[in-house]
Image (tube, rainbow, N blue to C red; front, top):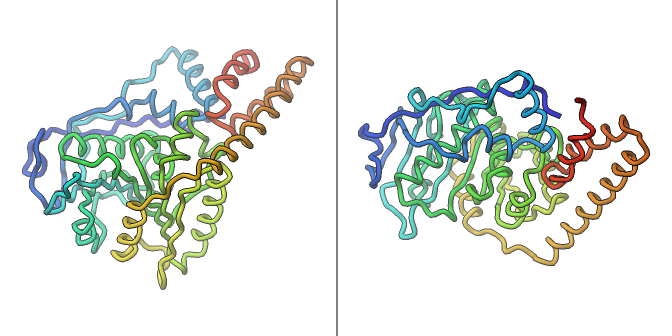
Length: 348
């Protein structure tokens, strides 16, 4: 269930196009640009869409109910585009099929390009973009997630970007945000580089998205985990995260361990290996995927039958508890039935 204290719909801002960095509507110069300003909003970064994709169905119901009771409405965007700046790197040569794009969520507050990355980005034809004031001290829902989405939207509107090579990445706490966005926005990001930071999916902290998005994530998203061999806590987290991915039928996953490295941002060699892996996704094994989905559907059906039996017997307290468990475990896969039942079971 959603804690209202955890909903921080903070304003994030982009400014006008027209510095020497990025020119609207045409290719701009190559190189490294700081304090870049953007102008374009996107429905994908709207508060309502963030809630739909990243909250569990019952958390979204709670949010709507809290707003109604307080006689407030959710603003269209949490972003004031006049105040935010971005860092952008553009390779010198455009690939024939268009640039790849790497949206980077940092743990720090500035939008710097990690040392040594430019030569690798040149090699693979990858544009890099990152937001300022999007570090670990910033609100995930109010800033970090919408800023990353707006960064992607503004770059693809200004450059010829291959939609099959749009990726999200992050380091440490930023990697956890990148993983949330990869899960909730598989129609935007075709892959993710999770550098020394990951979590299991399918729980209260990282609920599963709506069914259509979850199916797309299972079938078309490639995940590459990159962690140093001396970064033991995050290696253990990677193992737990990868295990949860496979439990939820996400099989195009690769773990890469960087030798002689601790908790540090990927070096150029590690970045190169990760980008190479992203560009070589595995073809889904249809039989394996369908069998896995079928097993989940069977578990969900059993849980729903148990819930409806509790309701039929008038055991509403137990039913509320069971509904919360289903929402946390199955997230968007349980909707819309979970939402229909919530209307009757949640406190009036």
